[in-house]
Image (tube, rainbow, N blue to C red):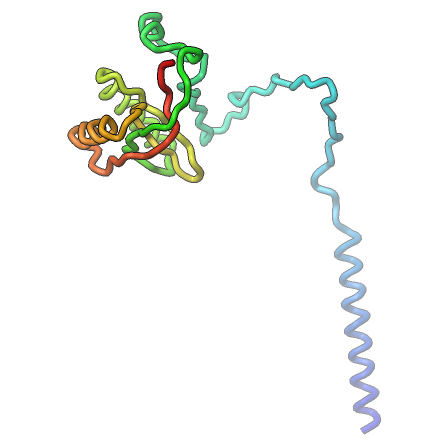
Length: 173
């Protein structure tokens, strides 16, 4: 009986030593795969704008320009029709949402299609990202009746799931 206790103690001790040695070998032999880059503090208030995302050569990367910013493309006559940002203000109102998707390509194509249809009616098209969805909304309606008419027009154009959303809209001062 004493030999059995002695044998089990020896086995237990050897097992502990083996685990300890294995643990030390696995920790001590690892290489540092990622080198830490030194932190560059920006104390001047200046930002480095030399990064160009087009140099990434990433086929999955889609860069969509902001259609509401000052760098808009288009002819001079198109830009003359649009009120300047200084001539507009934000107010409570309504827009009609015609699509919600998690696919940026589908959203961009739908935005272009809706812009072609609704621009002639005097309604602007917006692509809004609210994680994880890209939403296409049209119009800047101040009252609910105008939004309902726009929703009905969207349904006539084939956007059967169109509905009214209460949101901030751009109105001419």
